[in-house]
Amino acid sequence: MSKIVILVGSMRKNGNTARLAQSFAEGASKNNNVEIVSVADYNVNPCIGCNSCFTREGNQCFQNDDMVRIYEKLRNADVVVVASPVYFYGISAQMKAVVDRLHTPMRNTFHIKKLGLLLVGAAELPNLFDPIIMQYQMVLDFFKLESIGTVLVRGVKDIGDIENNSALKEANELGALM
Image (cartoon, rainbow, N blue to C red; front, side):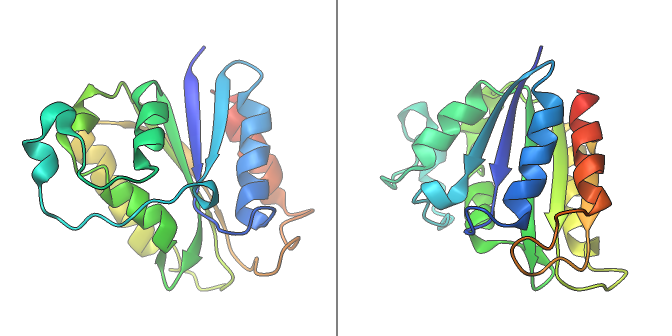
């Protein structure tokens, strides 16, 4: 049984990205402990690149925000799944702030071994997800993580558009493999 943390990067609490993450969680929760962490519930400032976390006790960031709560969740995770809407060919700004705040030596104390990716985009472009996939692969390579897989959904814009989309079944089946 693994501890899986799903980071949902949409500010829409009941949007398509949240629905896709929920479908994955339903599949994964059969054999794992799964927690969905919606960035909409946290106030996380962007990293300012000061590198003070490299010298502060416990590698703590000087910023006093909710990232400390997310660090605690990630510290105990075996698997992290990033779920994000695609905004201008990248993950959401709120998710990017969380990812950038992982630029800390504290991450070396985490036990994460596997990473997954769930993306939802409104456009139908064939290369819509390419920039994010490239970054995902670089993170996998750098941290020597295993990919559990990806679910990439095009043409989903308005809340509810994902309902009856085969991606929900695909996400559920990916979760069930965990």
